[in-house]
Image 1 (cartoon, one colour):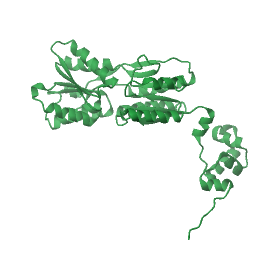
Image 2: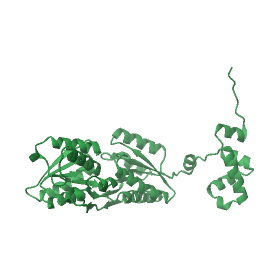
Image 3: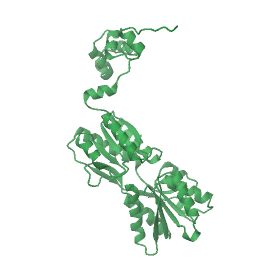
Image 4: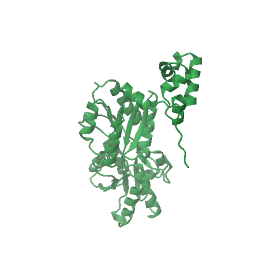
Length: 354
């Protein structure tokens, strides 16, 4: 025979049910609700003995402060939403690290979500951030951000595009000059005498890929005997780089590129593994390879990878700074920060671990 057990009322009952409130804590400690609030938020103005008594009551009752409710009552959140294209990509991990560091220094927190390059997931995460009334949003959008982000900004939620320029949109942005990055990567291999270039990366409708390819084409266009082939990938992963390299190995040697400019380092490393392993090609003698982002894996690859470096953590820090300033002064107009990339030369193009 089963027995039911009622939950007692009062502070003890609240603790048993796991729903202790500030009022319960105040009653147990024998102080006012305002004193409990001061202990939680400004303990320096409360006598030490009272602080100790209130904290003992908090521990006894298992009280957990509800910051979300407190922020909603105040009309202001301390949480920033960060929506990235692919959380598996170390580039975005480093951007998030920079964003968190800047946010933490101002008493803010960052919640990261992953669109996985899916418009549906992107929309769902934006819905979530909006319902949570975050302080603002940092987003690396899949395609054109559309009117939704502008409506959010107009309604008082700051939005900063990350790793993406805003164009004519009324949104702030922090990015790197990807056209210049693609150009300097191509110019590097052209200066080494390479003439059959391939740009491997995608999806092709990503603005970053379009800009990097445009930079490659501008450098190649200045060398009459040089050519570039764009090889689109579904995503920017190791596996996509491996698949592209396997397809290249299926061609006669004379039809293969003598230099590969990858959309990012993951694609470059995947291609490098297949070309050296299955293809038994020499890197860079047979094929020179340049990545993009200069993630930590680039220098640790079996053949250290030349790469176009982006200031990843600085991008995150700058995006949070702009967002915070817009939250404090909604009248600020959109601002656009574009960092210059840097080419880091290693053995995958020169044969030397420079």
